[in-house]
Length: 400
Image (cartoon, rainbow, N blue to C red; front, side, top):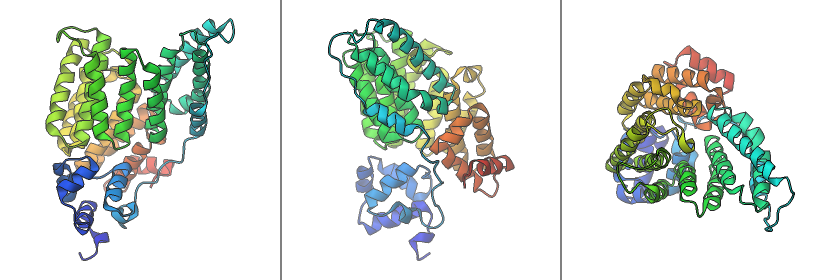
């Protein structure tokens, strides 16, 4: 093979790295990854199925992403910008000014009503009804901002929750930079309340990981986790343990993204200890934290560390539990998309197709509106052994 366009993508990375006279270690440092991660990519042990990662590698190599992908691996067609995202952007760009005096006498009842609206929007998101959340968020953000501008103090916790929800949704839709703005707003609104700061840091960690800033994600999550960690290892309220444990999971996933096997295992084990004390079936601070959630994170971490067979093993073991069905639909569907990626990397398109069909059955919006899910659907559909159900689903969604 005398043309780099004909090489597998991992070999193509090695080709261009050598052309740029970069060692694996220097290249890894530029990406914020480990040398082991780069070596696995170049040997084809670890696949590159995230468009954001491909873009980072192309930027570090000073080439276009299309050059890196070559003729044989064009990225999956991404869904068009979901209707309503621009209105969310406009809502995030609006500011209600607080002048220290109530705007109207009935502002306190309005805060109660807005609180119920925020609660309903979170529940809708956790049921993976993303188009409905997109539709209500602009008005909801405006309402919460007006309550805060009233100056009565009622609205700030609601504002944190509204911004957390917004960040979670935008990351889901692939609007990472806008999600970063929402997460940053949540952190600012939470200032002075350690619990609210910890809750907002969950979304901040998600945004950092989604934008390829794994080192920043790990640092932010750990800082927030250890600020609310109980002094007594056997103590702590379920809510505090859930937040602390969820942040440790976020840090572990960031460590896995960086290729740090040891830190990933240690952080997940620490989170598992907290999960055992919280138990199953709870959703403190919208975390759905518990032993099953931690073991699903072990699957995601194994996938990012390049061990697809271990990821599949954790998936199959964990989803047999009764507690799997107690998790929010959004959580389960998101995991099934990760599981599909694991089956793909394990060279099992039938398994990948099975879990994608299950994800579409449970939460259609997860597959139809989430770019990451459409990418893996396209990848599975291109396999010559892809199940007919996947071919039909990809055709129905216009994914090729």
